[in-house]
Image (cartoon, rainbow, N blue to C red; front, side, top):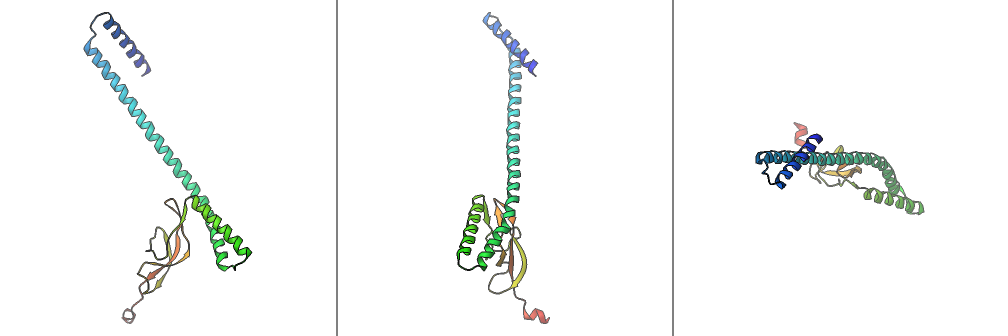
Length: 181
């Protein structure tokens, strides 16, 4: 292709020399050269578009890999947060309690700043993408398939579930008539 370009440049110089000498250049020859130049331009534009698409795909894939690695690391912190929260529930108000509270709050803020957020579950409709049902509770207080109790918090990083919320889900009470039949 490089050789063709050199030949085309030489031909263009010859055509310019003909015009300067007062000779009329061959219109068909100039049209053919213009068409060839258009072909080269179109090929270059396609090449640029292909490269831009490749660059975008590569960046997107790189970001997916980074997000997956970050999600794995963040998952390792969740049990620590669970244990700190359990210690707070069991603890009494004192200096140890205050220290654990500060560490727990700092860990929550750090995770939040990294894009981790808790899954809001209690009172929400059961969603298997975000909730893991461990039991059904017969109740008339809540509509069927509503999360009535969260046993373990769930978390999301960006739109990726790090860990689903472990929940109890409302079920309609069994009718006495159905039990007899």
